[in-house]
Each structure stands twice: as structure tokens, then as C-alpha cells.
Image 1 (tube, helix red, strand yellow):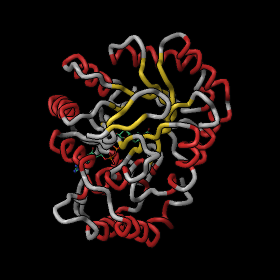
Image 2: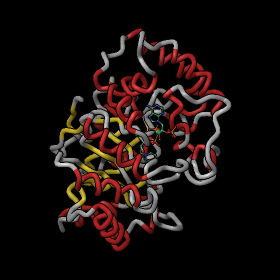
Image 3: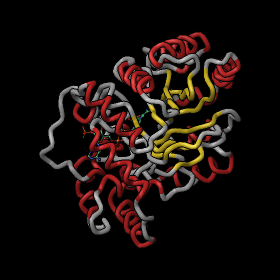
Image 4: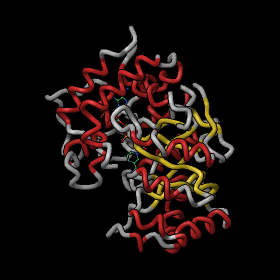
Length: 327
Ligand SMILES: NC(=O)c1ccc[n+]([C@@H]2O[C@H](COP(=O)([O-])OP(=O)(O)OC[C@H]3O[C@@H](n4cnc5c(N)ncnc54)[C@H](OP(=O)(O)O)[C@@H]3O)[C@@H](O)[C@H]2O)c1
């Protein structure tokens, strides 16, 4: 496993890290035993950074991470998120009182005195025009409740606005073979300001592992079933917002680009790691075998310029018209 600087936090994080949404919920049935095994596998593979949120299984994901932290001696940095407990989910809800309460809940779930990294959880765009929200985060840092803070965003423009606040240390954004726009302007600006980047949904919810087909079926409580058209949250979070049939055809074209002997999931992650502005990709993993396979991306040889150009052509031809100007 190779490590990269997470912006100006002072942390060197595994370039393939761990996304802990699925082990909390919204991805069909998961067993805690298997989730714990997946987390242990991640640490065995060199992962030292885990992304979670208070709402993933209503604290279940955070509590599993706390358990693994108790069972391991390795230093693990945990990034969590706040804001999605708000109902309705409004900009006004992102106030000091509510943020303090969310932080206290996460501290309890994680069994910690101080959160390593707190991210605003895809707040309404208006939040980025309210300096007082970032003032409240500065106060939480001064009070010793959080070490650093960052944002998780839906749109490139939100990311660009967020990093105008000098203490925003990280931005989490969807970046994968099917969502290439962040690399155009945002990465340059984030690098210039020393902001860390977490590439989320790196496998387009499993599509870029190459295992899904027209006949794949998803449980009722799996967002790949209930949020396929954005019924519950931003449609971009499910299959990266790409129409399923179009995506399957593009996956087959990408498959033709694989170097001999390579698997598609690590290939898709290696594509992300070709961007040096990215601090880490945070693939979700429910099972130890998936995690081990994803971590192998860090050991793969860099992709050739011809391969990168081919992925770009596939994106431009079929995916770009569906997503490029939407996020
Ligand atoms: N708003 C936000 O801030 C936000 C939103 C989304 C995600 N995130 C973060 O980003 C992380 C990653 O995104 P994601 O989990 O949505 O999507 P993802 O990483 O693109 O896909 C993860 C899913 O793909 C499947 N998978 C993983 N590795 C595989 C492999 N090697 N082979 C085959 N299948 C594999 C697993 O599901 P199955 O086995 O069930 O197919 C897994 O749950 C999340 O866990 C979360 O930490 C944040």
C-alpha cells in the first residue's frame, strides 16, 4: 500500500482507503461479523483511513469502526460526517447548536474524545455562502472536539466555493471513470490550496467492478433499488447518476482496456489514482475478499497514456452527455 498526504492535515493516508457506508446500511443485508472481517482485512492490507457518517445505519457503521479500533494497535484516522440527521435537511439546520449535538453523538459512537475529521454531509448549496457555519466548525476545533474539518459535496462548484474557507482541509467528491469533471478545474485549485481530496463512489456503486448485468437484482433496502431515480437522495450517489443500461455498455468497453490478468475493480481504482491531486479513493467494501482486491490497486503499474485516452473516449462518447453538466 502506498500513502499520500491528506492535504495539510499532516496525515499520510493509504491511497486506497475504506468507505464504510455499506457496513452501516442502505445496501441490503449486511452481517456485522462480515463487516468487521472486512475492516480487519482493510487494516491488514495497509488501510489507515476510514470514511463513515453518523447516519450510516444510525451509528452502526461508526460503532463497528470503534470496535475494530479497540481490537487493533495500528493508528487509524476516521473521517465522519454530520448534517444528514436534519429533517427537513435545510441550510438553517447547519447551525452551531445542531453541529455540536451531531459531534457529541459521533464521539459517543466512535468512543473518542476528539473527531479526527468532520465533514459536512452534502449540505444544501446555500451552506457554502454562510461563513458562520465554518465559524462554528472553527469553534469546535478550538474546543478540541474535532481535529480538522472538510466537506462532502455533490457539485464541482460547491467544492470550489467550499475551499475558499481557509480551514476546509478536505473535499470529498464523486470521481471515477464515469464522473470525470472534477479533474478539469477543481483538482488544480485544490492542489494549489493544499486541500486533500477523497474520491468517493469510485466503483460507481459496484458497476465498475464489472460484475453487474442487466439481470442483477438488488434488495428492497439497497439504494441501487430504491434510489435508482433519486427518490431518496441525490441520484448521483447511485451508479454515479448514469443510466444503468448505458453504464453496462460502457463497462464492456472499459473491460477491453484491461491489461492482461487485471481485474476490473482495481483497474477502475488505479484510474483514479493516476490523478496526483487525489489523496485517496474510498471504495465501499462489505466482504474481506472485495477489500483485498480493491487494495491491490495500489500495487498495480500506472496506466499507459493510450489506456487513459481510451477511457476518456468512452466517457466522451456515451457518459459525458448524461452527467458532465449535472454535477
Ligand atoms: N454523500 C456522501 O458523502 C457519500 C455518498 C456516497 C458514498 N460516500 C462514501 O464513499 C464510499 C464509497 O462509495 P460507495 O460505497 O457508495 O460506492 P462504491 O465504492 O463505488 O461501491 C461500493 C460497492 O461496490 C461493491 N464492491 C466493492 N468492491 C468490490 C469488488 N472488488 N468487486 C465487486 N464488487 C465490489 C460492494 O457492493 P455489493 O457487494 O453489494 O455489490 C460495495 O458496497 C462510501 O462507503 C462512503 O464512505 C459518501
